[in-house]
Length: 217
Ligand code: E4P
Image (tube, rainbow, N blue to C red; front, side, top):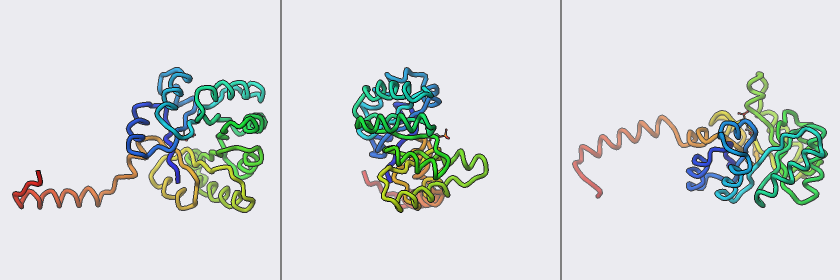
C-alpha cells in the first residue's frame, strides 16, 4: 500500500520523505489554510520535494471553471494530481482533464456508487473519506471494502485512496482490505511505529545493559 501524507506542512513532509515514507501528498483548502501559505507557492515547494503525485484541489463548483483551475494547478509541476469534488460537475471536469492526460483525484467520496461514477469518468484516484463516515456512526472501512470489490469485479484501474484516516487502526484495516493508497496526517504515520511492548522491552534491555557495565562505543 502506498503512503500519501495528508498535509501542506513542508517540514513534516520533508522529515517523512527522508525516511522513504512518502509516496505522494494530498492537500485540500482546509490544509492550505492551516499552512498559512499561498497555494501555488506551497504546492510548488512540495512538488520539488516529493516525486509521487501531489494532490491540489480546485475550489470552483462549475465544470468549466473547475477545468480552468485544474489546468492552472497542473502547470505547477508534472506530478500534480488535480483534486475535484465528487459532484456532477466534478465528474465532467474529471473526464475532460483525464482525457488531456492529467492525473485526477476525485475527492469527498462517501458511497460505492459515487466511486463507480468516478472510475467511469476516468479518475486516477478515488478518495473515500472513512473518518468522516465514522463521525456519523457509519463504518468507513466497509465503504473501502465495497469499492475494492466493485473495482475488482470490473477491472477498473482507478486507485482506491483511503482518505480521512484518523487512527493507526484505520491504516491496518484499509491495508487488510487492499486499498491501493492511504493518506494520513503526519502524526498518524509516526504513531504506526509505536507499541507499548516495544517501549517496555527497550526499558528492560537498557536497564540490564547498564548492569553489565559495558560500552559498545
Ligand atoms: C484527503 O485527501 C483529505 O484531505 C483528508 O483525508 C480529509 O481528512 P479529514 O476528514 O480528517 O479532514
